[in-house]
Amino acid sequence: MGRIIAAHPRIGLKSRGDAFTTLARSIVGQQISVKAADAVWGRFCLSCGELTPQAVLRRRATTLRACGLSERKVEYIRDLCQHFVSGRIDPARFAVQDDEAIIAELTDIRGIGRWTAEMFLIFNLLRPNVLPLDDLGLLKAVSLHYLDGEPVVGRAGRDRVEALAGQWAPWRSVATWYLWRSLDPVPVEY
Image (cartoon, rainbow, N blue to C red):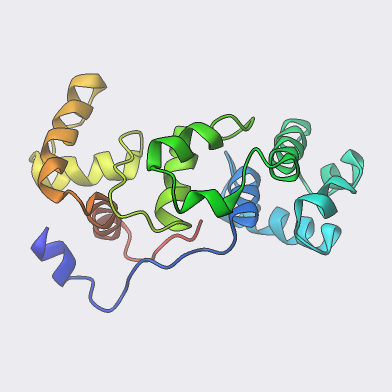
């Protein structure tokens, strides 16, 4: 880990905006290229004007689909908005909640799974000890740097990564971020 950190000086993790915008952008970007996601996101922002749950809910589904969102993503975005408007998701509570409580709240939103919730914890809330065991980049980097290229496969492989990551606690998010940098030096923004 020391070599990886030394190879990437003067860069670090920064929060990526407010909770609603971060989660909406993660839904928009699912299963499409970064370039396509940026284009759809730009049209979405222009269409909505103000990026608040209330403003997005005022837009017709056809207007949102015209931005490049699939019918399913429109449903997901609307469910996200409803969670914020109803108070089921309240970012003010995040400061006193543990990671698993936040993950449980976020995965109650249609279209948000554990991986997205973990990315939110890392990139929005800057939680220091998140280990996203379903992240392919993390698994690839661990394979490369710690397992002599042996692929991480199945539950047994993830258990092995989790055991190895015990030495990074309570900074597993930081270790993950540096392992990502070892594969791609340009930080991705979520």
